[in-house]
Image 1 (spheres, rainbow, N blue to C red):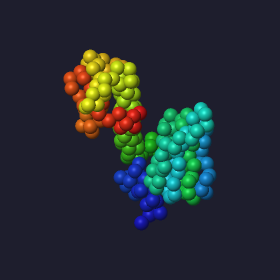
Image 2: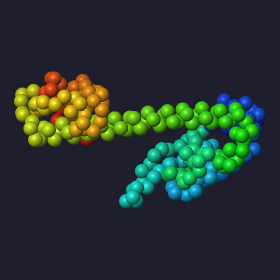
Image 3: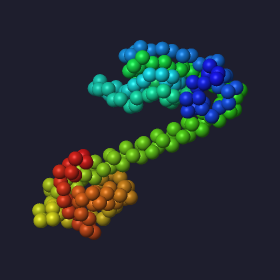
Image 4: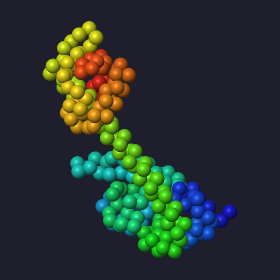
Length: 225
């Protein structure tokens, strides 16, 4: 086994032949960080991408009021700061070792020089970047849907307060609105609203009856905010 076999644990490179792995091994830098050490700060000039060789790294952003938002905990084989590859710019988040860690550092310029000479490495990186982009699109879609669920619940609760009629089945909302009207109020697509209302109906939170909606479990609806 070559002394660069640890690179096979990195998704970017695990399908590469040993010859290509050896070329990457020659240009990388391995750095050790004690628990609590900052690897880079949000806003610093981005000059390299990183992989976790061992340990754990926390990726976080700080809000305008100084609150920390943890984006992800990176473990062995995970890549971080890849957004600066090829385009440079600033690191979009802060990376901190949350236990004693070793990270692989690959400087952008060194990678660019290498892929100009090695098309297999270039293809491997492009494939993985495309896959990660697809995953990000799914995450964004899920976040948008989650946000739409909260807004739909909020609109239904507002209608319940303003024009809800108490019945033995629950709070009746005689909206006289079609799904598109409701979608426009929520600020999402008709398909999203239809999907959300159907799921609420399935879970017994509401009951759908044409343009009427009966809120059966207002407490669970509040929990969706």
